[in-house]
Image (cartoon, rainbow, N blue to C red; front, side):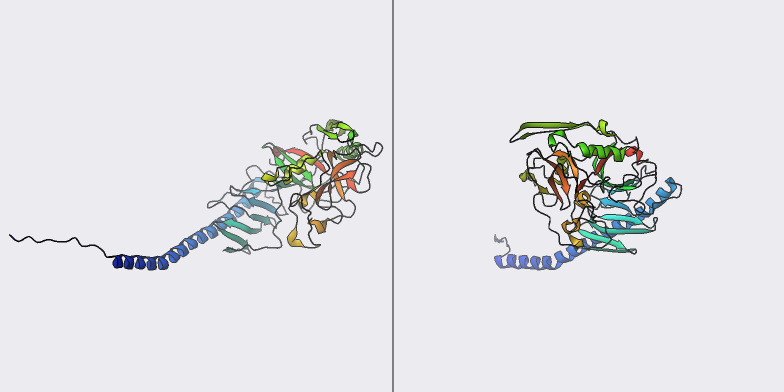
Length: 407
């Protein structure tokens, strides 16, 4: 019997290499095509989301008018996107804003960007929406999405740690206010004013005015002593806010304590109920928290402590803000804290007034008996002589129930 031996045949090394080369060539050809297809899908999705957001803004105008007897604000209504939603940050008093604080749309949530509605609801613009890695803008109903950020002169500047912009008359929360009828002149303490919300506890908004409501005033002129607290400042605050709406939430007391290198332990307490119970001063500690300066260096701050003679600049945390005069592209993100002060434009503010260099906080200097803290026109938390009434005024903080605004 004949036995035939069949040897099992396999690929040679050359054949395997040839297959690998062929697969690599196919991959080189196919992968870019696949990536291009995926990129086009992502781009199309970004454009569709932007279109959906514009449609949502149109529906928002309709809902607003149905809820407010056909009325819509004359000024600009602004929404900011943060990856979770696109939230209303402009609040006009005198309108029913219940269930009108968000834009409702389908699609990917933009991680950042701005939507504005103006001209009584007729103009809807989209600025710098970041969606799927693309930056989308829409002006004149023309949607463009790309990988480069486009800057527009009329896009509202990003304001660091501002939660909302509110327009209200502190003497009557029921008065209808918008950006077209506000007054931001130093000494204005009634009528429609602009406010920046920097704290939201879920029930209440805490906000600071965009200008000083008093003329310049000393901290405590006669005593020349910061351990007595801000006597003249508080009296000016009381006088300026005596007619303000009693719906404003009464501020609690403020306690300051520190150890002076020469005088030892020092302290004072401000009982705001003794000064009208309508408004208060912002504290140096709040400024440090807003800017992040209260954090340690490991957390991106400077570990600032209000008890010591330390100055910090609101931008850069500890570095002086040196914006060239008139440079609109180098605005400070904390301009809302020092706008409407003398010569502040060169340090990054938006608008300046010649009659005040800054305003007092409620906090002592902490290292000497003749100094107290204040916000200065150069964009810093600084310290001033307590008897210096020539340059610094009072900028109020109020707390308002959200239900009294979003109603």
